[in-house]
Amino acid sequence: MPEVNFQQPFHSAATVVEEYAIGKRDFEKAELGDANLQGVDLKGSDLSYADLSTANLSGANLRGCDLSFADLSQANLQNADLRGAMLFSADLRQADLQGTHLEKADCDHNTHFPPNFDLVQAGIKMRESANLP
Image 1 (cartoon, rainbow, N blue to C red):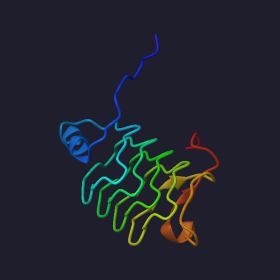
Image 2: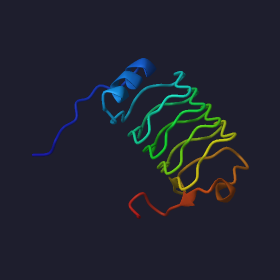
Image 3: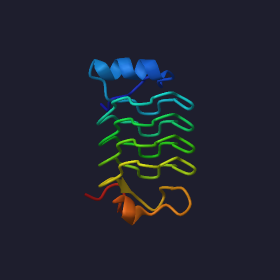
């Protein structure tokens, strides 16, 4: 029998930080638009399908996070660590990526970056599909 996830989405940055501290890593579909997550450590978390639009994630450790299908439009990601993150179909339009570490992050052709953003210079790997190794 398939496992059904009845988890309610997270609506509070403080709750996410508290849950992460006790070992939780599944924050899929979190609703954290406008949240202040400056400098938080959420390394290795599942934030797929999360609403992080206009969130302050400056200096955050999001290394290895799954941000597939996440809305990061207009988010402040200055100096955030997204190395090795999965950004498949993520929306980073108008995000502030100044100083953001994106080396070895994965994206696909459905990932939206700010205008004139240079994927090669950022060290991002373009994949055809999220299913590829």
